[in-house]
Length: 220
Image 1 (cartoon, helix red, strand yellow):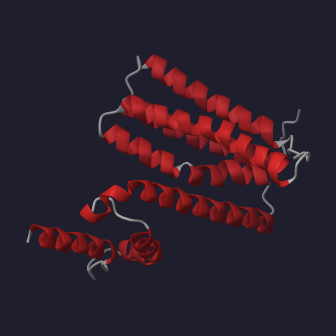
Image 2 (cartoon, helix red, strand yellow):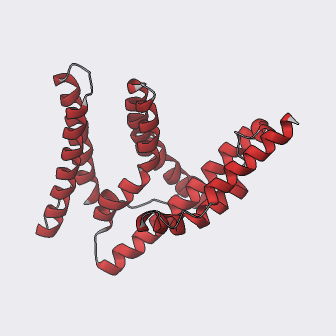
Image 3 (cartoon, rainbow, N blue to C red):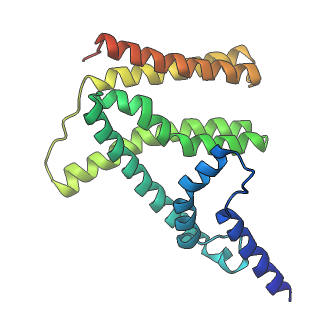
């Protein structure tokens, strides 16, 4: 009987994820439900829910499938952003800094948000920094290695020299602002510090857009 009750509760949980919002719900809520419904159906029926008793031993498969879906969605996002940049005549480095970088950082954002809500501020900071470290070293090293050593042995991948200095300047500026805020507040991240970080991000993004509109570039 207990197993039957658990099974019914699990089915109700899955149904709640796909349930249509009530007619009294705001228009934005209904619109978001329509947009996310295909993904909710896809993930519900392709990724085992480890919170359910019968799938708890399949956590490794769940992790692998989540990584696979994340990789597929990121690839689709980058492809769409690249085509959008070509259509609008936007430089690829600007699209990467202003759009693709933001979207690719959302998983890290949500992970840090969960850590912060649980009171693990150090883990939230480490998550953000480790994510950037992984993107820079592994994100560059692995694709370059596979292309030049496995797919096309002995080949050389050219890199656009105009995009690297600006990206490095933005990264170092962001790290400097973070360290300055942490030191000034004695390593106690309060509401005001978070607001300063958000404003700094908006200002950096605005500076990138202004430099691009004025034709300012940095080259080696």
